[in-house]
Image (cartoon, protein in one colour):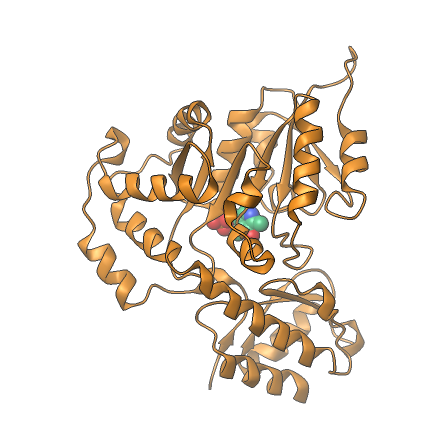
Length: 340
Ligand SMILES: *Cc1c(COP(=O)(O)O)cnc(C)c1O
């Protein structure tokens, strides 16, 4: 049976060209700063993000957590959207690792972003924690891969900076945002102090993310990465795959077109509700409550028929397009889903 795997853009696999680059990678001990391929990846990533330096980390989660550790002091407060990955999907890491208090704000990525953020920043008061950090997410996973425009990022950044609050961007899919907006990654990341982005999403790289920021910030982040056990040795084998991935960012436009195609077709399927206008990038969120099934039941049924997707709520299902899904695969999935 043909299987179309739309669970996540993390399921992409390295192709022959990428494996060849991994096999040929020049390596050294990166904890000693001696892996030339890791250095090249970090320089390339810093350049893409328009930052002084970058740090190769094993996962996006570690990149975000190292950023929170580096930006905050114990007991300070972090403003974050209530649906953000850092708050929702990172196992409570900020509480354990950084001993910070998260301030989840509902709607932080909506039209009232600026006023919600300004209200959440603490004034000086003996009772209050100090607001240390604002975390943003672009594209926003739980909002369905939606893009935060440059101007919103700029206004949030300027307002945060004026209050002495640093801005970290969870840019796991920042390249998707840049491709969707038709701008460069650095046009967006100029409006944050640090950014994490993933190499392992949609581009075939097996492992790895990058944290980019100022030189002194990255020096401190490197120590926290070591503390968390993320100091890797001959990691050039992995960085080489990341470098190949970074050469193909433009291909994400294809995933976006596939997601639009999927959304447009699903919108016409009875029992399934999707809003094609919210499909900015490679994620489609569908409400399956009209089928009378829960998300888990719906997904189990689809799995039997060869279409894989992820649960996203009691009645919500997430489909993600990526490099290893062709237009024909999407058309096949539409056929299966439409048949119910
Ligand atoms: C995937 C993802 C991460 C974390 O990446 P991992 O490599 O899976 O740890 C962080 N933020 C967002 C928005 C993501 O989608």
